[in-house]
Each structure stands twice: as C-alpha cells, then as structure tokens.
Image (tube, rainbow, N blue to C red; front, side, top):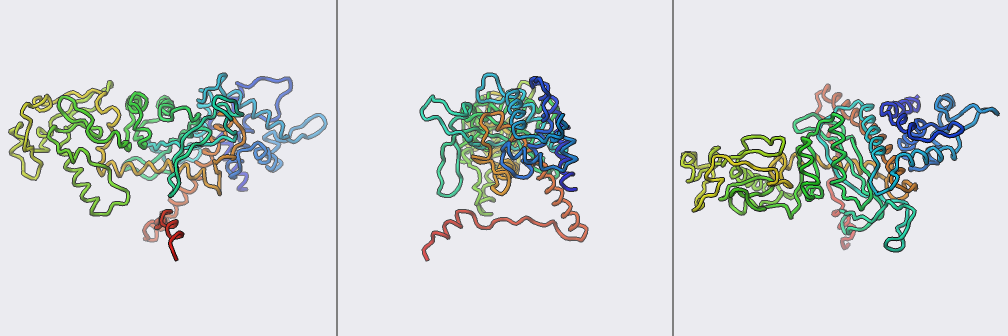
Amino acid sequence: MEATAALARLEAVVDASGVAERIETRLPVGIRPRQLQVRTLLVGMLLAAADGRPAQLTRVHRALVSLPEPERIRLGVVARWKDGPHELSYRQVERTFALVARALAKESPDGSPSEALSEVLDSLLEASIQAADAPQSSSLAVDWTDLETWSRPPRKQGGDCPDPEASWGHRRTDGPGERDELFFGYYLQVATMVRDEAGPEVPELVRRILLASSRVDPPPAFVPVIERMAQSGIESGDLLADSGYAHRRPESWALPLRRLGARLVQDLHPHDRGPKGTHMGAIAANGNLYCPATPKALLELSPLAPAASEEQQTAHDQKCAELQRHKLAAITGRDRDGYHRVACPATHDKLRCPLRPESMTLAHDRPEVLSPPEHPPVCCRQQTITVPPSVNAKTAQKHDYPSPAHRRSYTRRTAAERAYASVKDTAATDLSRGWCRLMGLAPLALFAGCAFATRNLRIQDAFRARQAEHQRRAARGLPPKRRKRRRQTAADLIAAAHAPP
C-alpha cells in the first residue's frame, strides 16, 4: 500500500508539471509506436531517485519492472503484442531516454542549458513543491557547488573527450587540512526556499536548479532563472547569497535582480568592504552613504566572527549602532530607474553637527561632529541629495552591513548548503562522481532535477512530522524538542586524534 501511494505521489508530480506532454511533442514520430512513453520514463527516474539509487538507466528499468503487475500494465511497462505480453526491455528505456536528451539539448552545445531543458526543470521542481502542499515564502538562498562528470578530461588542452560540454572548474574544500582543488565537470546552482523575516517556519525546498559547464560564470547565468520565476508570477523577496555572488560586476548580478524587486542580503567580499569613494561628499561604504565626518574605524568595521564571545558581540553591536547614526537617512524608496533621495543624518536627529545648528540642541548621547569640514560638500549644504543606481551598485542591500539585523537575516543562507548536503549524503542520493555515468549536460540535468524533486517530497514529510511532534508536545505543556547540535567541530576531533598520548 505504501509503495502504491508513493507511486501515485510521483505520478502526480509528473502530471502537475505537464512536462511529459511538452517533451512528447518534440520527439520524432517513428514507424512503430514506442512502448515506453515519456511520462512513464519520468516516473521511473523519480522512483530510482526516491530510492536513493544511482542515476543509471539500468536502475530506472529495474524500478519500472519491479512495480506490481497492475501498475506495470497501466503504465505500459507490460504491453500486449501479437505474440503475447511483452515486458519493457532495457534497450527501450535507453532509446526513449536518448530521444528525450537529444530533444532537450542545444543543437550547438555551449555549456548552458537550452530553453526547453530549463522549462522542464522549472516545471518539475515547482510541481514537487505544489505536490508537497507546503507553506511557501518569497525568500530564497542561492549557492553553487561542483558536479563532476564521469568523463575523463582531455589528455591535452583543446583535445577531445566523451563529454565536450564539461570543463575544468575550481571548488573549495572547507575541511581541516584540505586545500582547494580543480575538478572536471559542471557547476550546479540551487535556489532554496527559506522563511521570510519574522515569518513562520517553512520547509527548505529547492525551487530552482541550474546546471551549466564550469566555464560558465555561475552568478550571471542564474539571473535568467530568477527572471523566469518573476515572469511566472512568483514574487521576488529576500535573496541571500555569499560573497561569490556579491563580488561580481553589478551589471551581471545586483542591478538586474533589484529591477526584479529582489531584496539582496549578501556577504561582502573583503575587497568590497569599507570606504569606496564618495558621492557629493558623502562616503560610500558597505552599500550606504555616510557623513564625511564618520570615524574611519567605524567605516572599516568587519563582520563579527562566528566564534565571537558575548562580550565581543555586544561591543560589535554597539559600534554598528554608532555607525548607523552617521548614515545618511533615506527619505524615499528607489524608483523604477533605481534613483532615491537621502538626507544628512543631523537633519534627522541622528547626530549633532555645528553645520546644522538645530541639531546642537539634541541630547549629548548622540555622536557629535567635532571637526566639521572647512568647505562643506554638497551633502552638507543641501537638505537632500539624489543617489543614482550606480552609487553602491554592487554593495547596496536590505540591511546595513555588518549590522546585527544583517547577521540574523544572513544566517538563513545556510539552507542552500543543507540542500546540497541532503543530496550529497553517501547514505542517500550521493551526487558525487560516478552517480551518473551518462555524459552531457541534458542527461545530467534531468537526473539532477529528479533527485531534487524527490528530495523536496522527503524534506516536506520530515517537516510535517516535526511540526506534528511540536503540536503534541505543546498539547502536553512541553516546549518544542530542540535539535541536537554537534558540540565538537571536525577540527577538534582531528586534533584530538593526533594529540600525543
């Protein structure tokens, strides 16, 4: 009964996505009708992924022929031929999959997915979220990781290999004692749904993926994915990304996302932190404009270290609060062209400045400008100034960096890393080299989409079970059950193992 219910659930995902019908229209019509339809092939791929099997066509074939006899007949795995019932063969699975992969691939492969392949992946993942019937949010956490191909790299530069769309890429290894290294394959990006600020908890479901060659820069390649989401009516809310995204040119990442209505919450690259020029005399730093008399030590404030003590956190938060006093106050939001207006902080009762005599009547608990400029710049002479989108184009974001509000909001980004961990777990899907021995962008992307679709269903089931447990404990007057956290890091364990006796 459980197997039948699981099959029905996966069929509902395929039917809700509508991808089977769209793919069928792209396939050539043969002399003899195919026994294996695209819908059944996709169901078999989802069955193999749900069982944690490798992405191999033999596993897809085995998943289909292992179904109960009524289901096999209904799905066409067993067909009635002239000489009697005929069970689906592996060659038929191989043939149908080859037709699908060829139909979704580009005529001239360039390392990026075709429009048809992107639409199939988007629809399949969105259908898995709808089938999970999960609470949703508008906030997304994005990140990229490596996905190695089964092909060996070419023996010499410019040479041929079985997977011509793959390329050399760079990956970071955060393990203690490990170094960064090269790999041959693709970059896999995900957009994971996270809770909105001050919103209810939501399951961390993967809403979109993008697989592209390692020679394609990941951040600019992911912008069209967000654009397609906006065109389909999905609201763009908070977008959380690390410094690998924020460090790109604003024309290829930050500016197009802001035009879509996304609110960026990013970590800044060390090269982008601190003062970066001026605008009408105001200092541009960390995505904001500050008073020309702002202390240099405040402008160069770094983010709080993860292992900081409570005393260090309190001191850091106090400095952030003082820095915020020197920030020019926004008096309008950004218009369609990205322009907005700001005003001197002294005119908004944030600090005391002799150039603004009315501010000198404020209480002395506010910062005071002791040495105002001899020749006041425009930002000190005018009541307000206009800020074009080119100012702080790369670094402007939702919260002041590195304020406590930014720190709390940015912690949601780890959901993207947990999404990768859930499909790279050796006890489950394990998207490592050898997981899929088919070569080419389209085959890998199709199997990766099925892996994340089934992963969404699994995460939603765990979320529901956890919420039900919280409700049962609340009914008995007990607090929610806290998750166990590892008290020792991997570095502590390794150091203990190599410690002298």
